[in-house]
Length: 135
Image (cartoon, rainbow, N blue to C red; front, side, top):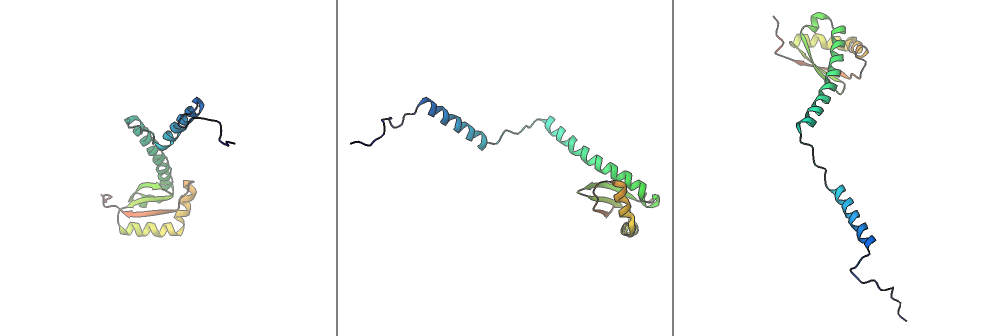
């Protein structure tokens, strides 16, 4: 008694089997290969606009809060450089202005800025900026 299965010649597949194998291979190729990058200038310009818009909105509202809260004699000796991740970068004219502003920030000015800014503000980083010279 022969217990072999019905005879299907080795190496031959049915039409359905080969179509399935080809579609499976094509699916694997699509997942394996990275899609081609769009190298047109339009995509880069759109991305730049989106990033600049986000930065401008954040820095613009912080600048409004800065001008409203910080005394004008100190604000005149500073320049808001930007804000990222809740850390505002502010350029100051000299070390004396930096010290005075740092003391004011520690004594409640930072809390006032947080209320006026209405967005997450962890700290204000002061950096001495030589381009801010007194006239």
